[in-house]
Image (cartoon, rainbow, N blue to C red; front, side, top):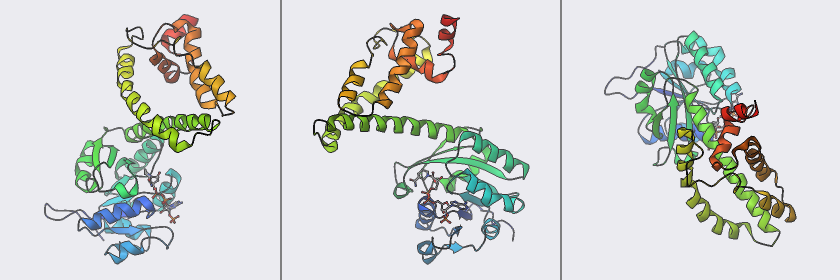
Length: 307
Ligand code: FVH
């Protein structure tokens, strides 16, 4: 079977490999828009509802690949992508692969090199949405890879989310996705730590949330100011909270007295202490970026200061 190539009037044929919560949502969104995707899942238990709605179930990965020009993988991890695709590399030749599995940037680049070696057009994607958000306003999909592949695939991808193209490096979309998730998880860990502290006084987590959420929401936009300082490279810009002022000892003592685990706040204190020890205590709090960016040196100036 030759790949089904779309004309101006005909939607592109799409095969979705992986019918977990997210893969199923992707297939359902295509059905909602009147497209008939081909679907495949390793285990036989998933996808019955999609087939009832008209999706074509492929019995094998090879069949799923042969039926479409655009192949979308949405599997658990990088290893499962390679396990699924390696045996069908030749069938994929001349087709387009969009991998929406969460992978590291290096894994995305490795898949890009593998695809190039087999004559497969490849795009890496990172979904910033939960399955119920797919196809609805607010869902975002970061993609990276060759611009021409992005342009060609975009009409299909737009059925799922707002597309943000991050450039030709296949690892770029996943890098920004994982960086944003790193920020989110650390922020949530901070909120959970705060909830653990006030629990010692019998304050319920929901009551803490009611007070903490508006405060944190008001603070978050200040990150843009810190970012401008970082990009400007001058941590002495007036108006910043200094590292000396940012000493977190009181918070750590209060956490310890409350019997809470203070490891998350201690990690932040260690970054501050490093920059203070290097002589930057009067500079802005944003300076801990230098310890995060180049942990081995504490930053370029820090390296000079200790040389
Ligand atoms: N769900 C979400 O909210 C997030 C949003 C952000 C991006 N993620 C990523 O999407 C990938 C898939 O996530 P998911 O939610 O669909 O995950 P599951 O429901 O657990 O389904 C996993 C599917 O992967 C198949 N699978 C697992 N291992 C293998 C393998 N070795 N070979 C072939 N397929 C495999 C599994 O099949 P089965 O267990 O039913 O046979 C499911 O189809 C993921 O990267 C998220 O990080 C979603």
